[in-house]
Amino acid sequence: MAILPLFNATVESVKARLRLQGVAATDPGQPLIEGAVQAVRVGFYRQIEQAQINVLLSYSSVENPTNEQEVLRQLAEVTELKWIRYELMRSMPMLFMDSAAGTQQAWNDEGIFRGMGVAERDAELKRLWSEIVQSLSLLTADETIPDETTMRVDVFVPDSAPMRPFGSLMFGSPWYTGITSPW
Image (cartoon, rainbow, N blue to C red; front, side, top):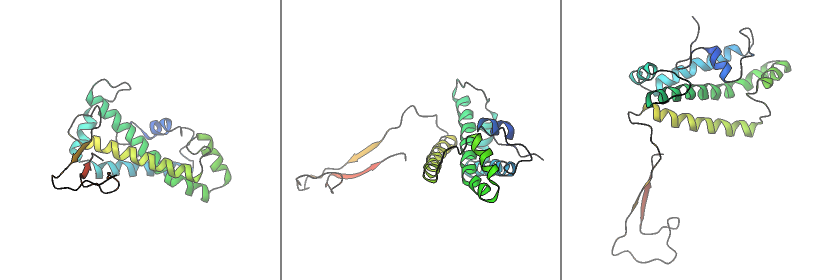
């Protein structure tokens, strides 16, 4: 039985969208791609309830979404691609260490690691994971996708609080009680 992505059509379409279409089924990297697809599929089921996944799968998959349902489905597809890329960026360096130099050259030609050092890869992994978490929170919510993010600030000024010169949020002003945010 072939491994299938959850929201994207096939592993081949995932490879094409990640610019890995040159990886043949016999390539040593193919099991890593399939493993990443499988890990992400399981990850979605661990993060989102099955009922919500079924709802997302029931929405039409279109290239140019025009309504909220199509946007959510597109968000699920893009999130799946980012998550697969994240998993591959974590697992592919091991393939390079275990294989001949030709494998690294072939994968470098594909573009997923082109010119990327350790620091750049780590920064990209952090950025991707942040975007994945944010998207998962939107996909699990029963609310509509917000147009903007708001922040609520609570300020408390007691009548008996002594006035402090140069009091500020950073230096322990007696008027500050906290900031709440959706993050």
